[in-house]
Image (cartoon, rainbow, N blue to C red; front, top):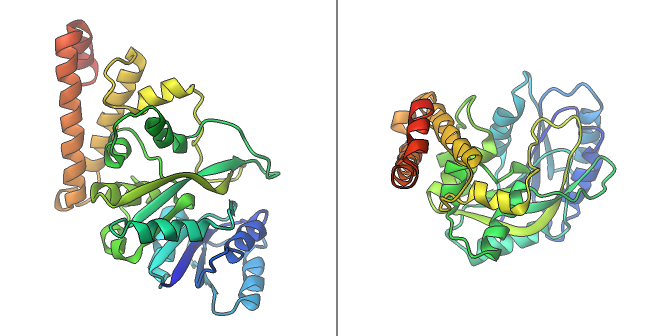
Length: 307
């Protein structure tokens, strides 16, 4: 089985050595690392060239002639990979030495699974652990409290919990995910949506890498200020006994998600979008029916403002 890593870089000189060393130092070695650089102006290209010289045939570098930004750059990197399993990697994290081995074990034990994401430690610029609740903890909390869920329900109706830096996918799903929808979805959210819709997504609760938080990163927002009980209320759509604030958030999220789909080019011809819309509409109807039965005044207020 051939293992690829798709890496996207852009002015990543500060942490790039640590990331690449952690990838090339895996207990199960990777066969290729495809790096797409998005026009870096610092020393990133020089660092990449050094690794290419040390690891010819493994490190493959592609320099974009125009800035693609992260979503389309990952689309390019994935497309250039030749492996049976493709790991996604940012430029500033650090992988656990057994990350590849542990992901492969899950793939081998679950042949139907096409996409795996995992939890991760969070670290600061100095590599020190940040002790905070993250979106990646939610599935573990659900399991601890015996709360029923499906990955598709959570990702589609509440929000994405699968971060690309903690993700690997099989070649078999590439035709279903590429091209990524432009403008409205991050690549990791889209991959998680498609695979969970197909029931081929799996989440590892164990922390398989160190996800770095710093001022220059493009995407963040993985921390929760709320305590764990509020986290579970926000993500557990089967719990109807929630505050006005959380219910309002759910309704506005549904509205935003529906508008996002309807604004996506050619959405009507994509069965994934049809499944997403159907699920959103069913859940919106569920909220309406619940409010009609339990709090008619609140239902009238929501109907006037949001439905």
